[in-house]
Image (cartoon, rainbow, N blue to C red; front, side, top):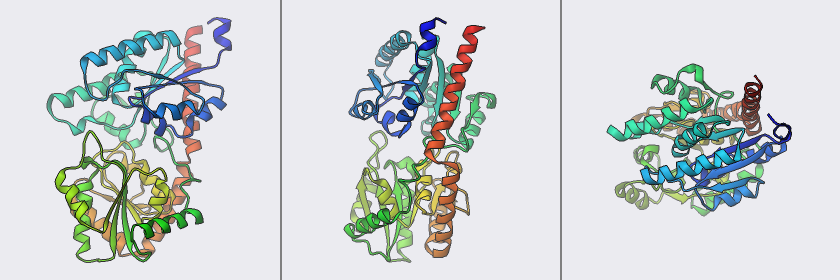
Length: 397
């Protein structure tokens, strides 16, 4: 190693498939990295969110990366990534999201010199069948075996990766008790300002303060269990007239909701859809409980965000979500794809206000103790330091 290399700042490359992931998956992380003395370069497909990343002091590089499988475009992007990695000589290439992980793993291994870090945020291949399922699972296998270090964002996701034969336990670690980005516990706090904003939102939507609001926040997609949530809501409406369903989030372009369920949602005046909102904390605060009956998820960060706001939660009893709540303490599990199980869990909260209050309080305490975003990012920065130290030690051996 030359004197020049010893004196330079450690250089980190963070790669995701699309620009929005660079922005929303690393909130508050880039300023911390820069303050710790790292040089940071972010790489993804071009898009408006790269501007948000640059405003945080990070250099960005746009590459021709597509979310869908396209052999010609993928090979072109692989070559572009290889040239970037070869030229920039990063200390660490940190990749996540499926396409970015596959291409960065191969290009990084071919370019050499950099330590490769993969954050696995969930398993996508269970959504597919046949050859496509095998292809997508193989992408995860390549991303994992090329990496020098693999981080699973939850303990149960780690168990699933091991069970599926993608990687052995010895090659995967979980930081703390999990989570991909933790929670800003000051922003997601049941403060008087947020409570006031929540009351205004309920008023604007025509929801009385005494009414009960079941909430959801996330991508509007069948795999998120929206169909089951709407069905459970209609069943409960037969017994309770003062309930509402508040759906926060945009339609998923890749897996949109079907026409039939969209019509059901539009016809019912007590189902409120507001699309994507920047102040999601105010909308969660307007809910009496939050449900996320998803079929798959790497962790389920919205569950701990709702808990931080003092709301009881319902999450699917699946890898990932299983680690984002404490069953019977901060909320309840529901079986994925099971309307009766989901309805039962909602009714338990709807009919017991004291239990809701106890779970909300316990949830806030649990999140503050385990998922403070600053602590989550510091754990990741320690991994960076370990990888850089190991790389230096290997080069000096």
